[in-house]
Length: 170
Ligand SMILES: [Fe+2]
Ligand SMILES: [Fe+2]
Image 1 (cartoon, rainbow, N blue to C red):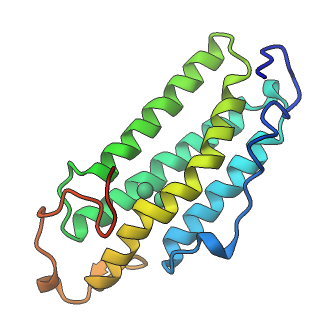
Image 2: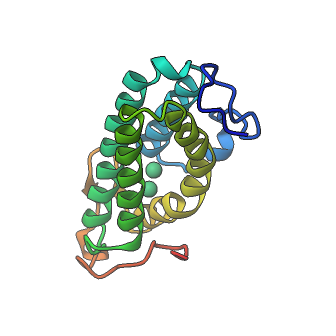
């Protein structure tokens, strides 16, 4: 299936293009906006020929660093340990994304396309499991992600959670 010499963006037609839809909404405006931006970036990236993907990929990587840092900030503010399974999962994704850039620069010209396809599959699943758990937890403790403040700080016990809120980390 893989063709390392391909220059068209159609190496992975079996992974459908990712489009934003209400099915991905988690009822948190900032989280939804960030996910919507990532969906659009992944989609634009996959539409580019391999030799034009690097800058868009770096932009996606920078956005993903901010995206994950934002969620991890909210986790800490709502009682998670810094060392928790959702944050560890983010770190694994970022490690992989950075390795992909390295391999692309070393000559694997199809690897960004493979990562784009992988992210198109990964993002909706992650959003609807780990991020959905975080969004629900934020709502339960009355955390406002727009102002990043707690309406009632007594609802949060700092650094007491290491799971993923309402969902399993498996
Ligand atoms: Fe997210
Ligand atoms: Fe997340």
